[in-house]
Length: 66
Image 1: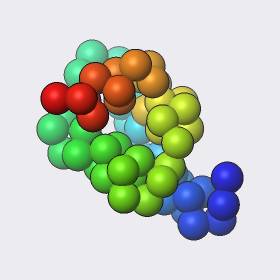
Image 2: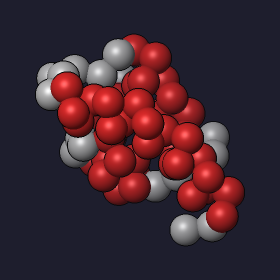
Image 3: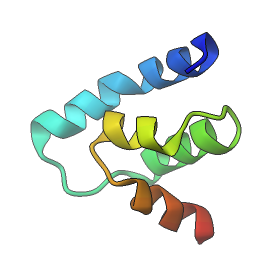
Image 4: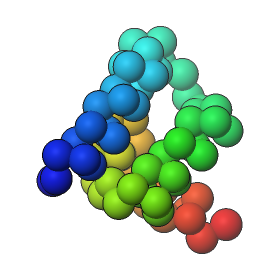
């Protein structure tokens, strides 16, 4: 992963950690938009985003296809 992509993922870690600690079942629409933007525009891998946010890669695929 390139340095730019790593920085992109790091800025999402705080919201992701809050999500994991509070056991929230759903991501907000803003979080979904941030994830899609990070993947589609900045090239962050679905696997990395899924790992950081505690969701499945398939979920990100579903968001992309809708």
